[in-house]
Length: 466
Ligand code: NDP
Image (cartoon, rainbow, N blue to C red; front, side, top):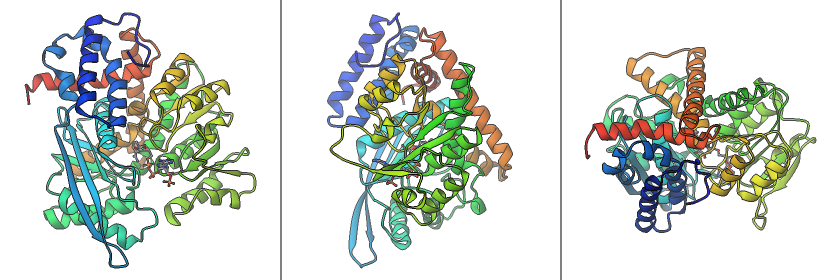
């Protein structure tokens, strides 16, 4: 078995079943490193549930769960500002629709490939199940890099991307949203083109603008939810976030609103980053500084380096590709909020965080910790909130946006935030209690994987072999 700590009562038949499925996944998906990592992490934690439900093996639930219902790949040609033709690759992975229409974000980043989108779609299935809302799982995107492109180029790209995607999605079929590189601007261009081609104005995308079907709190939801989840974890030890020194990686959508909510809870955020480097501000990133960051990142689309030029209390540490660790995680802190990207905390980073007294990790990004890092956190009894639980607030609020769209009404900011908060409390309770029930108390990796899985597995059983 791999690196995630198994419960003491691991059942040999269930372990053998998981091993055989993992071997088949490895041989069928060679080179898909991220997908294999995500599948291994999840399947190994499902053994207690598989032991309690032998019928899942009989019905080949795992074999079906790891195979996308549909994987689309398409050409995205567009013309840049110099009149040159550019060609990107577009994807949509429709992973599982057992409990609702496919739902999950679109990522535009040069690193995007089939493996990364399959890992994200696979995680999304269980995450969406945890939210308590009726949403299946999917993910999509392109290797297009919006960085450095003009608004007109981004628009032409989005229009070309949607010219193919529109025939596969729909408010009752597949409802994409944003992710890395896809914010309000991109969702606007994508929605405009969908509406033109489909001749339909409906909730086919979430993360929409407030004047055309969006939900209040959707931009804030992933970050806020990640902090609500951290707060719930701390409550189990009768602690709060007030006065805690926090590290937040990234400086995009999730990071920004994680920081905002942390400030509201009285925590002190001392670091953040982008793909070029890290800033460390020992005096804390207060509300005024955060507003400046929001303008830098969302308005001027600048680099985080500029923070250290503007605020002299901070120092800038540029990325050094020769290092086998991330300098951000060497800063002494009580809590870590990885909110940038996958595998941004390796075993060395995790060991440093633990050694420096870090007591809580709440994952805003998807799969930010490697399997070895996760194991270290669990062994050190760090309060560890895995991504599919801790960052589920984003997709949960997308679900609330879908609900408002289908009822043709809009809830107030307070109402949406209150529903989001209650959903995060419920996700934590469910993961916490499930972990206890299956013999791994306090282990929210097991708890959230099993809780998410049971609902999907039972729905798949109910619906027959499809
Ligand atoms: P954004 O594009 O808004 O921000 C991403 C941030 O992470 C940027 O600061 C970016 O830096 C940094 N980053 C991206 N890739 C890398 C990399 N390879 N190495 C170092 N830094 C990197 O994306 P989001 O905030 O929306 O998403 C962040 C994470 O949260 C992702 O893992 C996403 O899947 C996850 N997530 C997002 C949700 C949402 O609602 N938006 C919902 C649930 C999860 P730079 O600007 O230099 O590229």
